[in-house]
Length: 84
Image (cartoon, rainbow, N blue to C red):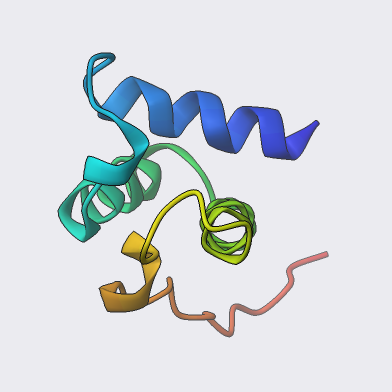
């Protein structure tokens, strides 16, 4: 179910008429910047992982030439203290 949330959020960032081959790293960066405003760091990392896996699958199946994730730094893990 998280994969669906990640993809739906990404689809809100890119234009509907954009072909999957034309998605660029800047689109993914815009998506990650949007996530920073709405979800926790752990969720950002999870959604980025799902998007990255999706594009890597498309590359593996020769549906696209290269993944737009290769030039994007993933969200960094933050060591936050858990408060009980």
